Amino acid sequence: MNRSLFSKAIVPGLFSFMTSSFKERQPYYSTISTIKNSRRAYEESAYYAGLGLLAEKPEGEGITYDDFIQGPTKRWVHKTYALGCRITEEMIEDSLYPDIPTEMSDMTKELGRSARETIEVLVHDLYNGTTKTAGDGNAIFYNTHTKLGGGTWSNLLTPAADLASSSLKQALLNIEETTDDRGKQQVIKPKILLVPAELEFTAKELLNSTHTPENANNSINSLQSRSLQLIIDPYLTDSNAWFLIAEKNPFITFMRRKVKFAKDGEFETGDSKFKTSFRLSCECNNPMGVYKSAGA
Image (cartoon, rainbow, N blue to C red; front, side, top):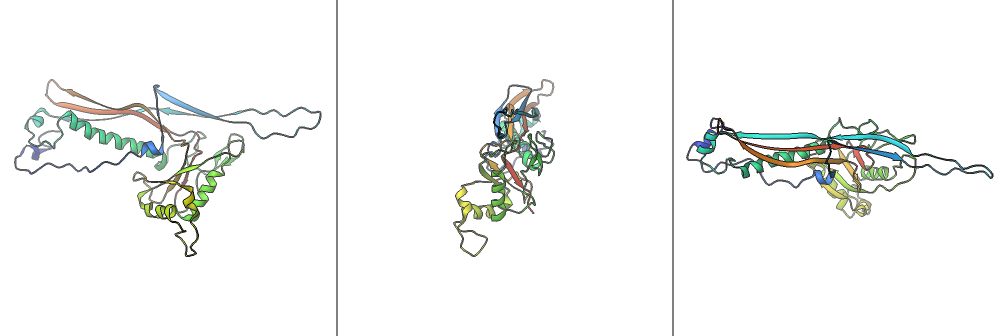
């Protein structure tokens, strides 16, 4: 950043030099992903299938034996993200307005905002993106995930449907009836309904109305008893897609190094240099516990 780029900053007579920022949002990434710390270059996760059902044992014959089944291993490879800003010595000396960030405290705030926004985008790629895969090699939200004991399971509403009373009830039923890798019943309790800003009012009507908002029969709204936490997420890029997240969220974000800041000066030019960086990885191995409808 130099005087030619910010020419108005060295010209007297301006009332103020305003930035384009408003009040910052509370972080979303820590709610829609499980955050863990890491001390290694990478982290790995594996899962296994337990034992199957008991077999009938005829009189005088031996029992049937079963084995645990090893599942796939997923690796979280931490990547480094960084950004810097350089301000010339002349710019620092000649700037007439305190709103221009030329001190470490000012630059920390600006770089910190960029870092937080970057983390949000990276974590939300688990929901928005198309390149992330589960441990079985399929897309995270997929119709036929592979069960270790044979067969498939789904965490994608098919056919896709817009958010409505009937589609939300079907999604709740589907996620709760998902059996484990050996076909045994398990408890998956949906906790969060995650929607983009475009679906805010529809979601609030579905969850908060005492009676069903979609018909004139004055029926009791059974969805209200589920006490789902509604999160209206501006980082979701598909205006029609919506998600259910269980109490145990399988999306894991490892923070290898939290956001940090540094400042240095350049002897030859007298310029000041500021930077921020962090190391992070976001992946999912077994995506039971998250469910998606892409919308109609």
